[in-house]
Image (cartoon, rainbow, N blue to C red; front, side):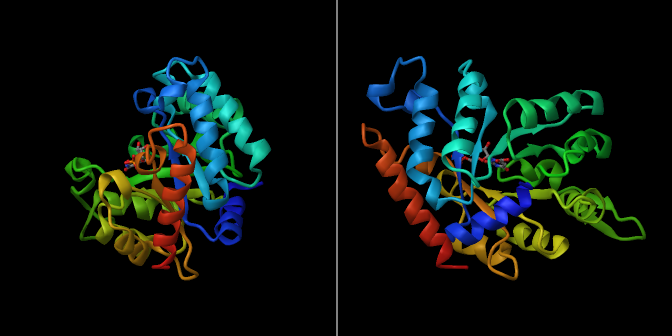
Length: 275
Ligand SMILES: O=C(O)c1cc(=O)[nH]c(=O)n1[C@@H]1O[C@H](COP(=O)(O)O)[C@@H](O)[C@H]1O
């Protein structure tokens, strides 16, 4: 199924704009999982099974798996989501960016090895570096635009000359370029941090109904009400609002998955209160 169709169906059927981020840090695992060779998989599987009915997508962050030599557990986890929770899109957060020939290998890795439904990509090497992902027309390509971190302003806020006259900020150029040019197959989305609601509103204005992946609520302190007000589309969807640590580590004991479910439910409901 096309990533965008699956995402739209999940928004409607689960009445949720929440994306649970899967950033497994073994140092924060409960004691009964410590030291197990399959701890990364078992931890994430428990979170997935406890929260799947509450989310519009899951977002595993590849570095947390690779750092633990747990790529095989990432493959198994994504396969588990597809089998046990069909229709739940998986966004592989890899923030790739490289010349076209290498990007082609990253695209195979994401979509054929891991069987992700979408990938995060860094657009700052330009169109040819993104084309190998765009060529998978049924997969989502989620481009960094205005990131949630404080240093995001260092470059993304630089003023650049606008073709035809005037100036615009670099993140605005990215948003326009993606909406007006790169999105020919309708498979693009943009990353805009919840820590910058004014820019979420600006990106929404520049991109119409394009889905936005919005990390930065929870551990990074982004405001849910401001995020939803600035980013929702006309029908009250349009957002994948990510929370990772605040949900994954809501509990520290054997009942961590139940605690994660409560945190996910509270977050989903807090988001829905402002839609
Ligand atoms: O692309 C991302 O997902 C991303 C973009 C961004 O601008 N900021 C950001 O925090 N992220 C990711 O979103 C997640 C945020 O995690 P928490 O702060 O624990 O909710 C991490 O996996 C980050 O790598």
